[in-house]
Image (cartoon, rainbow over all chains, first blue to last red; front, side, top):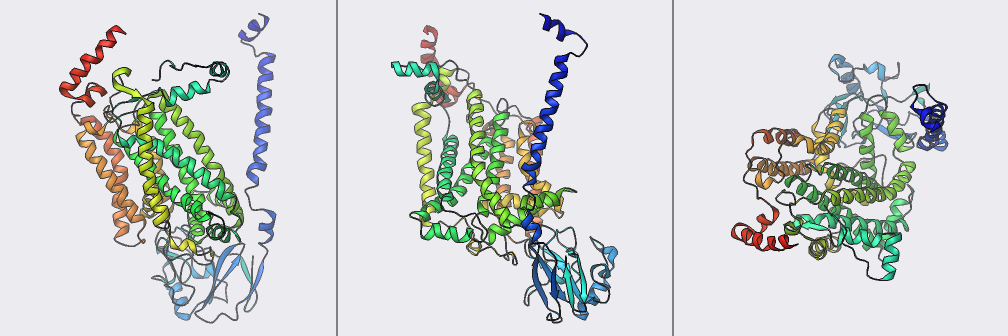
Length: 183
Length: 423
């Protein structure tokens, strides 16, 4: 009976306090368990370590040719563009683009003929065609994604189809005239 | 609906067990004496067929897991090892892969049956929503299972489907990285998909338990949609009536299943999945398994990434809201002349979307996909409107009347009411 009068009062009781603190500690404890349970899903140390920068010699890539390589498990296209392709990329009015970027923003000054982009369609991640000889390059002399029909131009910019963004440019820098470091 | 238990333990051991764990009573009440409407047609056997398929998939799946290696460099070869070296491995794998397709055949018939006969309406809303949850879990399980052989379709299917999450603003990219466990679909992705592919069927089994619990609490719907009014006249006991009918339906279904397994084992698969995964080249024409094609067509119909993903998800989630979207009080489409026509149009729209999902992303397929996507969602809007003005035809007064009809009904009524008066 003593308990009944204790709990029916308007004042919070010691029991209320104990319930609240117990619940709070329980929530914090259960919540902190989420850290290892969810954190293990993130890329592990081995995967992260495999993402160290890599060096690439561009000299063997002939004009008009493109190569594919992997960095951090992601496909990268490196293309030595022809004069025509560069001119086409420069001639575009960027106000008409879905993801407006100039060709200069996507290449390194003095090395405009080299285009380095991720080879994964920004729609749902398929590999766009157009790097190897004989593959369709789409309507804009760049790449064409066979999965859902996105067209990229000779600067890797999205021009037509469902993809929302340009092919992203990975972080890289020229270490010599024809040598780059990706990462 | 089940009312009082009619189980009578006969022996001393049965009485002893019944007092401690009434498990025999549970089975008796839910699978033997349980009353089922006397007018159920063969479309009602698909619940039992689905339960059978779930058990079959779990048995073959657990065995396949004993021979499979979830590693990106070994997975493809371990599947070929199952096909060539493991005793009866070819049979078990074909049963499992075709079993997935047959599972979806059965679930689509089951869903369309529920749509036609209004099985989602009160008091079966929770039963229906549990079904939608099972459907979602099935899709997740089937998708992750298809990734395991690590062929070209496995790899690129996994890439495309996981990339769907990247459409979400702000957190999308992080979610995708956490799904992959790396910066692309790779070994960590395969490992976690294997783990989840093993887990999810047991979660399905759990939700199926709830689904059956809800079913047995509210009772089965039936082709008239008229609720059971008199258990003695409108129903028959589950055993032997429903048990035998379900078994017969299952045997017929298994004939078709066996035909695929033994004569066309790769008919529902894709040849590209016999090429090992290659992260540097996407197959020229990637398509998901046939049972995802209608939703894939909706995804591609929307010329916006986030919009496409939302439309595809919405096409499934909208089913869960059906009990409240359909405004008609009449359950069975048999008595709804206008809604019935819309139902058959909806069936054609779904088949049409399935066809378009398998076609390349070119004209005229894209435009037709857009029209059919509008019609798909239009069906649900139509159900909301039709219920307001549609005049349903005359409903039978009871299930017994609908079965025995006209004079037969009166006769049955007269004879059946006699023991009623006495008893």
